[in-house]
Amino acid sequence: MKKSAYYLLLLAAVPLAFSCNQGTKNSAKGDAVAKADSLIKSDCFQAIDGKDTADLKIKTLSTGKIAGKLVINYLDKGKNDGLVEGNFKGDTLFVDYTFKIGTSNPTIYKNPLAFLKKDGKLVMGVGQIETSLGKSYFVRGKPISFDKGRFVFASIDCKE
Image (cartoon, rainbow, N blue to C red):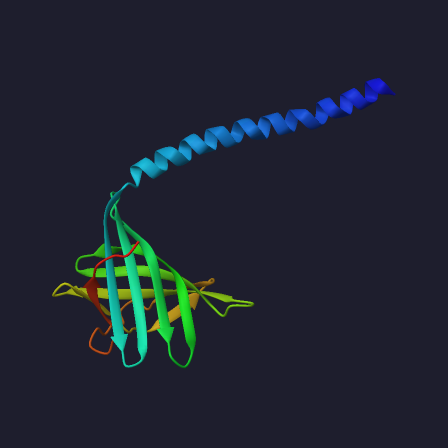
């Protein structure tokens, strides 16, 4: 009886020891990725449209990718709070905006956004979006209008 208990203990310990070693290997890989994606600069922007406001903080990584946070406060609809990830193509920043609406049981959405960099500001564009296989994107061949954009983001000092 005691031998079978020892065998069971040994069988349970082997996968545990193996998974602990795997975590160390993955952690080293994660450190290498973090070093490859080192931060070049941080920029903060704010936009005001009537009583609606938006705050955008983006970080430019050494890989050329952009990552950050966008919070849009609508007076009547509440707050969209989420993360942006993307990159510049010429003078236009294309990002995927993953955000949540609601507090007690939030719903998560993911939409594409485009910002035109002009005169030190970022102008949010408006374009036709379609969804295919669960991914939303701007329709190819359809222009994105930066004249109809609601939010014009001006550069501000970043607050930590």
